[in-house]
Length: 219
Image (tube, rainbow, N blue to C red; front, side):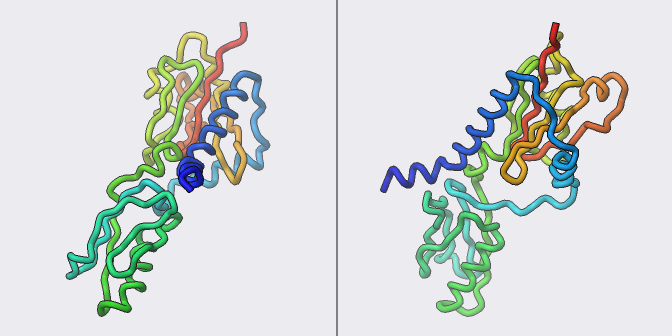
């Protein structure tokens, strides 16, 4: 039983490790970019619109507040089985839901015990997204880094955060690797054009899980 729970708990981290390992292996060779169609699709998924709702996962901590019923309010971690325990109604599925969706579900369950319950759910710790919501820079930079994703950050922001390129960097051969619909899309980034010419056409916005890789020049 414990072994099954542990496997579930770290399954998301395992997927991240597999993705990162793929990028490391790919970075050791000359990597062709993905097809124009796949690149357009991957880039169109980041239009700068509204931020999608946060989806709860195991190890997140949520505070459930029931208006005018403080004895029913609670702050609990989401268990490895994806559930939380709420007074009166017991276990409730939390993983895979947005906080607002979880609140509505608890309201429905509580309506059998109290009249017109009003529930709010606040995420106080986001442990489940510790790795999947990060962005990374590898290759010919001063300091390869992994950072929490922030709305609006671009590939240039990532390069600067990594301390800039080293003297051997092939900046116009940089590649942005983006997980998209079950595969990794390789998107060319011309960092030298961005820095030297002010051409920001490829200064793409980063998405959670993106990896920017800068190769070294061939001599």
